Image (cartoon, rainbow, N blue to C red):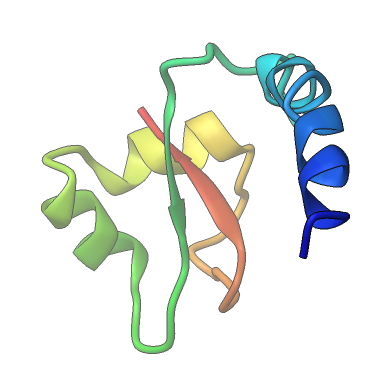
Length: 78
């Protein structure tokens, strides 16, 4: 067990640097934008109601041309 201590003491230096910059920062949308991942049974109107917005605003924000959304799709909520 004494050999575990040196290994543990060498890692804290790298952890803060790794978490300081998020790798998937979206460039097209503001950092404060709300996103929602579509789940089974979701509809655009239901999502709009949940976030107190409109279907039209969600469609415009996401470049949607129809009311079709897919499970797992990530929508920007305006």
